[in-house]
Structure formats: C-alpha cells, structure tokens
Amino acid sequence: MHIKPIRNDQDLRQAFERLEEIFQAKPMTPEYDEMEILTTLIEVYENKHYPIGPASPIEAIKFRMEQQGLSLRDLEPYIGTSGRVSEVLNGKRSLSLRMIKKLHDGLRIPYESLLSASA
Image 1 (cartoon, rainbow, N blue to C red):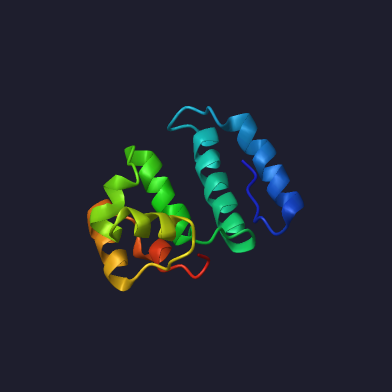
Image 2 (spheres, helix red, strand yellow; image 1 turned 90 degrees about the vertical axis):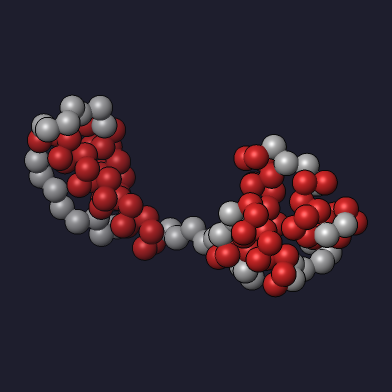
C-alpha cells in the first residue's frame, strides 16, 4: 500500500484509478484499508476544490416533492393557496419565514436549503 496526499487533479485522477482497481476489496484486507483511506482523501480534496453548495429553495422543494410523490396541492398546508404555491415554485414569490418553518417542520427540508440565497 502506497498512500500519498492528493495535491492536484492529476493526483486525484491517479487515486480514482487505484480506487477503481480495489473497490471490491474484501473487509479486513490491506486493499480494503487502502480503499477506505483513498475514499477519505478523495472526499476531502473534492470538498475543498469542488464544493457543492446547498440547493436553491425551489430545487429543494421540488426534490422533496419528487421523493415523496407530492402534488402542488400537498404543499398548500406549508405555503398557502394553490396560486401562492405556483408563484413560489415559479420563482415569482419568495418564501416567507413562516413558510420556511412549515416546510422544514412538515417536510424535513433543511433550513440551509430553504434559506439559500440562490433562489
């Protein structure tokens, strides 16, 4: 096992190539240990150099709707009338703090996504 830090994209590519070779390693083997270490190193490098920000509020709501098979009508208890739900989902109306709290409490959408400025 030869592990080294991932300092650039070439190192990252090499780490992925090695990970591909040992990805099916059996637990309690040196290859499995190497796989776990490489996975951690890759994750740290990617989080630092290619961060993914939180989803926009609209994306977060639509994602939850898809996950739970919800219709626009199902959002009315959290957002308001059907017209208001449509306005929010079309980006014509911002979420109020009351809507954000209801969506978080009722649909478990993270506050981080609901309060994101990328709406």
